[in-house]
Length: 94
Image (cartoon, rainbow, N blue to C red; front, side, top):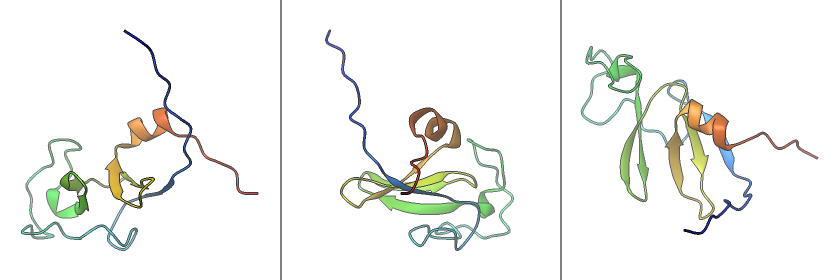
């Protein structure tokens, strides 16, 4: 099996904490009340504090602290903080 390295690509990303942090995140999630006390399976916070984002692969729940990444074709998708930290490093503005 051959090995491959991911090409270095600079992406735009914003961390999402609440409504208004990213224009593509729908809040509250469709069909969910802000007061819903159901817990998220991934972060265990109340699901009413979560957002929703449409991606090329379908919709995804956005947990508080997830990063919203703009892909190379202008698409948006969420990324968990631990995966973001393992995959990306900040590029200094010039």
